[in-house]
Length: 145
Image 1 (cartoon, helix red, strand yellow):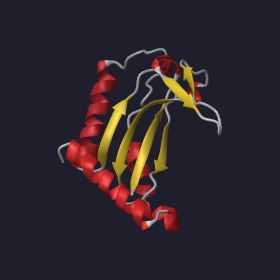
Image 2: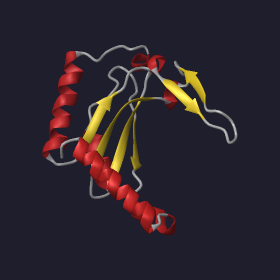
Image 3: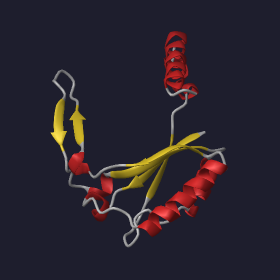
Image 4: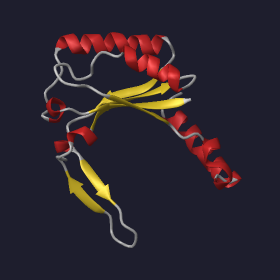
């Protein structure tokens, strides 16, 4: 199963305070463990929401663009990983090994399963499934896999 691990933002990450070398080294070591175990598919840190935009949708209306920063830090994301694990228990085991992503503050990771094609049942028609498979193959080709 694929799991997105969301690193929740903190007041310091929203201020753009960059991590110290010790934190970068600890996170680099952790990422190496994830890669060696075949768990990590992707992962990146994100700039603060002052550099972000949101696009809000309402039926029958033109999408509205909202400039950051956004006020509720606890609702924001500072980074993410995409993991391939056996089950949610394995993801939790790996998450517990993570260094505090927000040293000096309360850090938090949120683990969310990624939808797979079979989760959509009959709504994913054979035509839609073929389209999804075609797009995934094209993405892999573009990424040189």
